[in-house]
Length: 406
Image 1 (cartoon, rainbow, N blue to C red):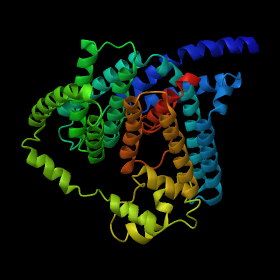
Image 2: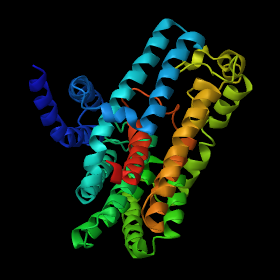
Image 3: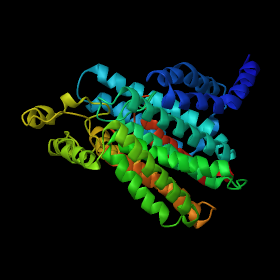
Image 4: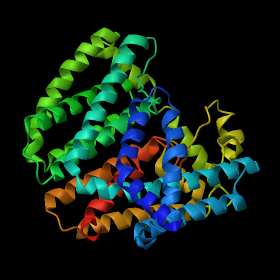
């Protein structure tokens, strides 16, 4: 019986890449926003559980990054039952988040070695999928949603901020994977695909009107330009193509002249983020060490009745990865997050790669930080596209730096 289970686990391990291809396609271009979640629960999680039960994932528990992440998840799940505000259902929901994320991390430990082994193929796949998701989002917006102010994508990309953030992250990962492919000969197809994807993602971010991804794209672009001398002419061509597409699409969408577009961005102000952050920080939890508890609903925190409601401020989650981690899991949780970041940074430093590659890997972490500054609730979620902007890029950097140990 056990031998049969081991053979099944071997077959599953060989198919994990195909499962992630399907999951990514459902998340980015799926016909319904819940399909990728259902696929994870029905297919990927059981596959991970079976592989775990037959002992094929024991090596994962020796990985220092996984150990820290597992301790973080255990602490977050356990502490919310002790100090969390709100009903028991909220604490059970937080526990479910940690379980789902645990399965996803185990799945990443199964999948990432495959990505590291074939960076060229995965780079082309991510760029092609990103281009397709972006083009479909633009077509949907121009055809069916011109009455809506902001673009969003298909599948799990139903939020304008998430749409721009996810596609920008996958663009950066895809281009980096092509760069890391030792067998690559800068083929015409690869160059054209990269230029097209940069242009499409720029258009998506333009129409999503999400200022966080705009800032992240600008800062990352300046950072990459500072050392990526060989790619500058590709980016220039992509920028010119993006400019043409943006002007054409803007005219169709009625966003031309750009003065209307800029006025729309300015009119939204800070989107209440400063008021949200002030509410969380000015009306703190009983203990900054532990926080409010993972997943504590916004209407259970003191700021809801004492600051947001009296001042007519729409209550919401923290809209910041760092502030969300602090207020939900306290200084302990923030310490875990800093430890995870420190481990990855240390491995970039000791990675046996060129200075250019190390700077590129560091750029991925910078992008994760930039996108998390004004978006998100923390780093612990149930099945969401946030996984694609936090855990996937961080784990890729980790595995590439340690590829000789895989």
